Length: 344
Image 1 (spheres, rainbow, N blue to C red):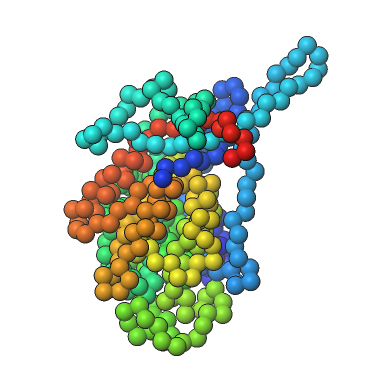
Image 2 (spheres, helix red, strand yellow; image 1 turned 180 degrees about the horizontal axis):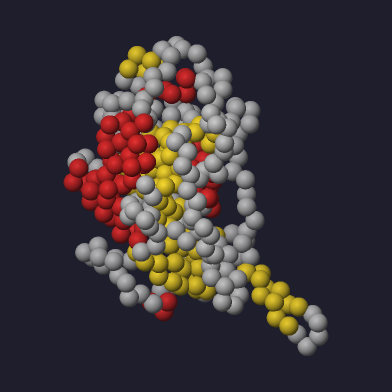
């Protein structure tokens, strides 16, 4: 959980299925709620002790309930689990296809065609993006590149007055540098504050010799560790769940992909992001003289949440990545169906 010196807590994506509630009649899939913005400059996430693993808490499966009056006072209830899929359609030139219709699609699960309940086009939705910056020991020399990439994302994608973003840094613990806001100035200031803090016994190059083992969530030794999955899990559960319901949710993960200390597993972080309807876009930035980049891990967490993984080697490749991310987030379709295989 995100906490800080002021003792406050901020409630903090291959191609995957996301559960959502669709009620019979003309109710929309999601009801709008007012946008919330945190002006908090910085708060700390307590890392759960070794004996208390932060297991993702399961949420009830959404149900479709249809009540039909009969000849008598009896009511027939029909309950259907719905699975949703967000996707982008593009031609061979990677241009968005905006003319798809429901009859153009087939949804197959285990090779079996499924009935489509909902089909809609989501274009130009407001964006709620959490930018996660790895500032652990393995990123000591590449942290300036990560921070530059974060600034570039703000300049390329965020639209003041419509979109919002939050800044999260992480080592062995997770720090909320800036809650959701549409202010570019505040976001830039938060990025500027992110820095590498060497732990006791650190001799450089991502190497820690001796030092005091971590005994609490705030121990300085955690600065040399990397808890990527913890950061994704906490951001999805405690931050994105408070973002606007009518917005497209995304995590921009800037890291080398080398997790060393997370208490939750990768699949748990993926499941939590799915529950938050969040797409994860990974930007692999690593120290070639240290650990490099774990491309496999970054591809997996991105693809299983509906996002993409990028490994830019130049400013031009980074700009192209952000342009693609922007198209993905602004131009998507939504399909919802009820799986025929109820045992899944």
